[in-house]
Image: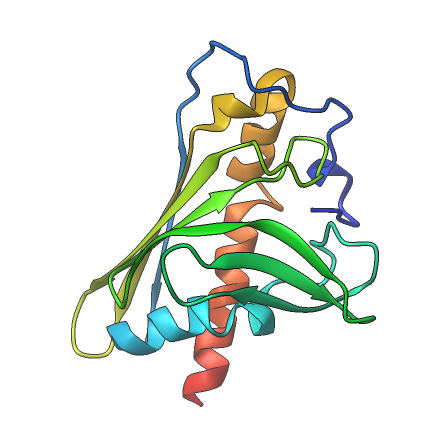
Length: 175
């Protein structure tokens, strides 16, 4: 993901043979939306809340797509219509859970052979509220740049920033 934020950049490309086991990054947000709506905005609506600066494509980002089934693709669409893969859908259990393969290296380039996982769970905490728990794991698979990438994911402008943008979109869509 190319970003205007220098903290999101890493100069070391990841390799797949790092024996170091890293703790997963875990983040949560509670949104004022029922379970189905929270899941829908996160998955089908990802292009509305994903920051356009967080792109790895050659063309400025126009949309982000998560195909709604196990085995589906996860990718960005550029303004010129080009597609840039980010990963794929490993598990689709609407509206409780989606597991995505994150195949973006520590140098923010796509690698179809890399596997880190995003496990996103949606838990109803009342009729109108949902807690979204995100876990980014298998970060050691990023290789040499894994620790720096983990630090980026765990701090601003990492997953907390992205979940905040998602929360704002949920609030907008409820208004």
